[in-house]
Image (tube, rainbow, N blue to C red; front, side, top):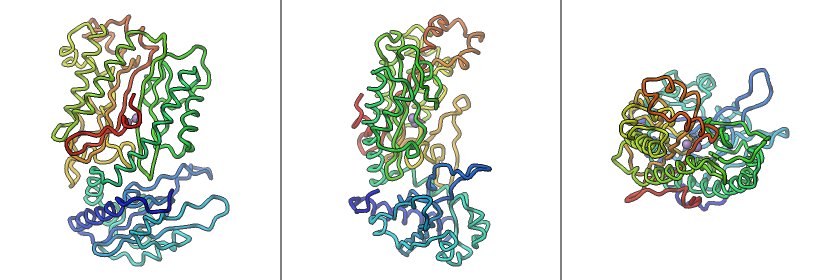
Length: 444
Ligand code: GLY
Ligand code: MN
Ligand code: MN
C-alpha cells in the first residue's frame, strides 16, 4: 500500500463519513462511535488463522491493514485511529497507516489490544461500538445498548450505498488490476490448460496471493460452469474443454471487482454458442438501461424475459417466450439474481434495505437469491450478471411437471455438458449515463 498521498478524494471521503456518521449518531441517541477493525479468526482446535478481513464499517473509513485497531469518532472533533502494531517476529506486522490516512486522523500507535482500549479511555454511556469484538467492548465499558445498535448500523450501511469519488477510484483500480489477469486466464484456456493452471495464470498476472482475492475465484470448464460457485480447480483433463466460465476479481484499497466471462473454443455446441452471443447482447443492454428510477426487481424480471426469448429462439423451449416467462420456465435456467451491490464487500450491504432506518424489502417469493431489491439511484455501484445454465438437479422436476412438453429434453441433455453462461460487469450509476467500469478495461 502506498504511503504517499496521491488521493485527493480521500479527504472528501472522510469528511463525508464524518457528516453522515454525525447525523446517524444524532438520530440514534449516541455521541461517540468506536469501530473495531476486527479480530483474527482461529480455526477450532487449531493454531491456524483464517485470512484476516477488516470490519467493513472500519474499512469504509480507512484502508488500514490489521486487526484490533479502534477508530474513534465524535462529532466536531478530528477522528482518531488507535492502531495496534504488535512487536512480533513470528508474523510480519501489518503495514503502517499510509500518509494519506495520517493526514485525516490522529493516529496513535500501541502494541497490544489492551493498550488500545486504555487509549480509548472511559467510553461514556452514549458511546456506540461497531465490530465483531462485542465481548471485548463490553468488558471495556460499552453499555449493552451501545453494542452494534441496529438503528445505527442500518444508517451506516445505508450510506455505503452511495459511493464517493474515492470509492469509485478504488473500484476502478480493482477492475484495472483484474482485467489483465482475465486475459491471461483466457489465454490459458485457449492453450488447453486445466482449471488449476488457468487459476495460477490468473494469480500470476494479478501479482497477488490467493488470500488477497476478494472472493474465491470460480474457474469452471465445461459442465463445471453449471455449479454457480464452483471452487474446485481440477488438475486433470482427458479432452480439451469447449467452454470456460471464469468469475474472478481483485482488491484495491479494500474495494473489490467482481467480473465474469464465458468463452467458447472451436467445437463448442453451436446452440450454446448462439445462446452465448444472445446473452452478451442482453447483458450489455441491462448495463445501459439500469438507470435511476428503475427497480432492480423489475430489471431482474426483464432478464428472465430475455432468457425466455433466448431459450425459445434456440428451440430449448417450444412455447412462445412470453408464455414461458409467465409459467416460470426460466427459473431452472437462471437460479441466481441479476446482481448485487459492490464495494468493500463483494456482495455489498444494503441491497435489500429500502430506507436509512433499516426497512428490508425481501425479494419476490420465487426469486429468493435476488440480493438487490432497491430502486436504482445515482452513485450506486452494482453488478449486472445474467446467466443461463444447464443444471440437472434444477431441471429434473420440470421433466415430470405439468409443462414438461414445453422443453426439448433431447436438446437440454445435449447441452448439459456445456455447463452454462454468465457475463458479469460492474456498473457505476453516473449522472446522465452509467459507467461500465469493467468494459473500460476488458471490452470483450
Ligand atoms: N462472484 C460472486 C458473484 O458474482 O456474486
Ligand atoms: Mn457478482
Ligand atoms: Mn462474480
